[in-house]
Length: 293
Image (tube, rainbow, N blue to C red):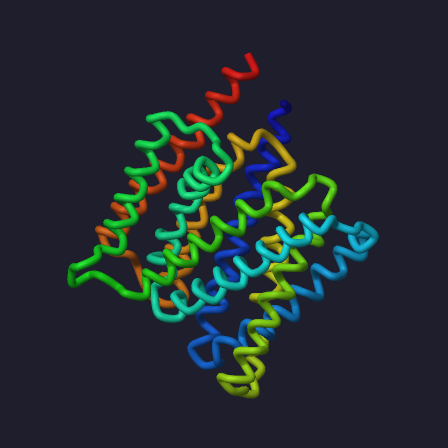
């Protein structure tokens, strides 16, 4: 495969992680003064509008998913709603870098989930890497110690919901438009935001709050699009490891926007999790090459 394709995929993946983290930064900032669910609802309107335009442009609505695929899309959307609520509730109360460090366990748990749900074979090396990665997560959250942050449990809950979300996509037929799948999740999250607003109350945003909501929505759309584009360019085994750049963005933006830096234990745990994840991706790539040979 041409090097230029791999490089394009890597750059798109890095752009995607940056966009998602900037979106998180805007949301953490604006929810200090604006109700959480109102922020979710307003941001959702922007994301839905962008994805709706994309769906129309790609004629996604001309496709009629089967009942089975529609059920999987619904499951994915519900899991995405739960993941978003748990993540933002945790983000409101935790440093951005600490929460991002917990999210780095996602590739490991998806690998484990695929083995449990779909019977994917994982050898002892990858299973060991998964267990080591989970030890890294425990170091980050430090249960039973003075450094334990109970809101980190919401972050773990968010990760588990994302695992369900991503595993639900796998059986969906390949001809189902990606824009349709993403739009279903965006509509679900937006609806939950407005339901929450009806209970939590409304606060008229000022110009700076509205600007940050707009920024969050736009960067969320960019993140969605570049993440899809990244996986369509280059070798997945080459591109996927660059998901971990989100932690670097989280550390930098957490410091610049909020003056927060992760402590030594969090950095140690994150290093273990990222190292285990990179080993798992390398091992999967090696096995694919052996099978192809």
